[in-house]
Image (cartoon, rainbow, N blue to C red; front, side, top):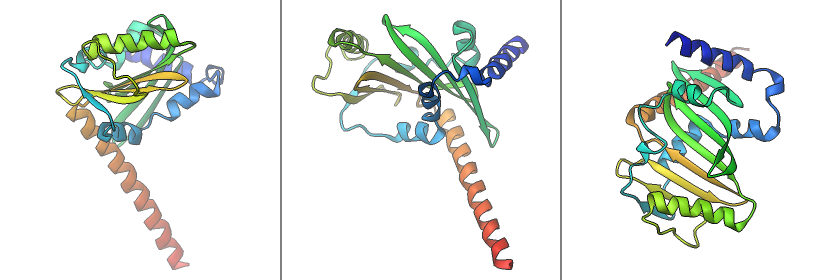
Amino acid sequence: MLLNRLTYLSYLLLSKKPFNWKTKRNSTFLNEETLPTLKSRLKFNSAFEVKTTVRLETSHLDAAITLFDILNQYKKPSLLRRYKTAGIKHDRILYKRMVLGLKSNVLYNFINEQMASVTFHISINDPQQLSLVNRHIAKNYLDGKFPKGNSQFTITDCKGNKLMYESGNDVKLIYINNNPEINQNINAALYHDRYSNEKYIDSTKFQLSLL
C-alpha cells in the first residue's frame, strides 16, 4: 500500500509539470470531468434508452478495481489531477491508448479511489472504423442488435449502471457506476461546495452592510 501511495504521488507531481500539458485538448478532457458532470450523468434520462442483461460493472466498472490498480496496470498517465472537498477525493486520470485498434483517449474518474466512471474518446477516420465500434457495442451489450439511426443513446443494466453512447466526429463511450456509496460521496462534496460558497457570499454581504 505504501508503494502504491508513493507511485501515485510521483505521477501526480510529474503531471503538474507544465510540459505535460501538451495540448489544449488534453486539458479540456479533464476540465469537462467535474463532480456536477458526474451527478448529471447519473440522473440523465436519455431520449433513447436500451436495457441490457449484461452487467456493466463487470466490464469497465468492476467494484474491485481501484485507482491504484489502474496506475499499476497502465503506469504513468498523460495527465493526473486530484480535487478534494469535505474529505471527498476526486481523481481524474487521462491515458492515451489503442482501443479496438483505434487511437483513443481514456479518462477515469475516481471518487475516494473507487471507480466512478470511465470515458473512451475513440478517434474515427472512416465509416469502417465506426462500424467496428458499433459492432463491438452490439455484440457485447445488445444481443447483436445495434439501434440504427441513433447517434446518441444510453444502455442501462439491472443495477442502474450506464453506458452512454455518443457518435459525432469521434465516438464517446461513457461507463457510469451507479454505486450508492459513490453517489453519496458526490452529493456530500457538492453540498459542501454549495454551502461554503453561500456562506462566503453571505459573509461578504454582511461586511458590506457594515461599511
